[in-house]
Length: 138
Image 1 (cartoon, helix red, strand yellow):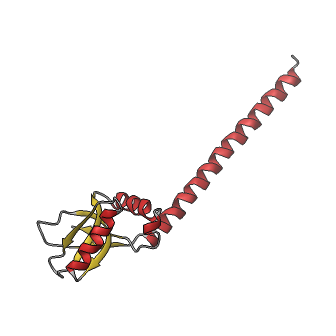
Image 2 (spheres, helix red, strand yellow; image 1 turned 135 degrees about the vertical axis):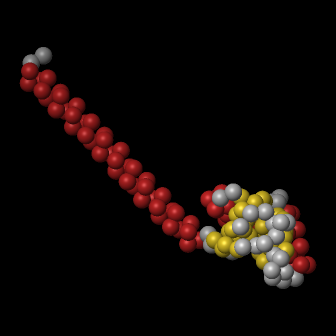
Image 3 (spheres, rainbow, N blue to C red; image 1 turned 45 degrees about the horizontal axis):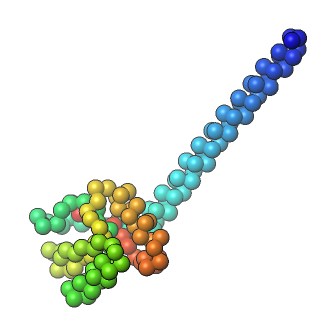
């Protein structure tokens, strides 16, 4: 093989490697940009409310709130209708305002985990237009 051919192969190999590397970098930039956009949308769509509830009966953590009711009967109806969909719903009474809070599933350890639950619920037709939000207790 002549030196010219070897040189051409090396140059082509180098150009191919540069193009491949640039493609990966562009994909990472686009991916990072997309993740930031998604996070911005989530921050706008998923409301976080912090509350310093002083009660040993209400554990600290993040709650996915489906509704808040002054009337306990209305809260029980909402809780039962969510449970009838096959989704676990629980209720607690806020010790400071005596309002009944309906929350979905469990107490989450992070806002992100609670947000994932909200996204899963919003994909269901029954929750498509729901005003779900996250309550941070503690």
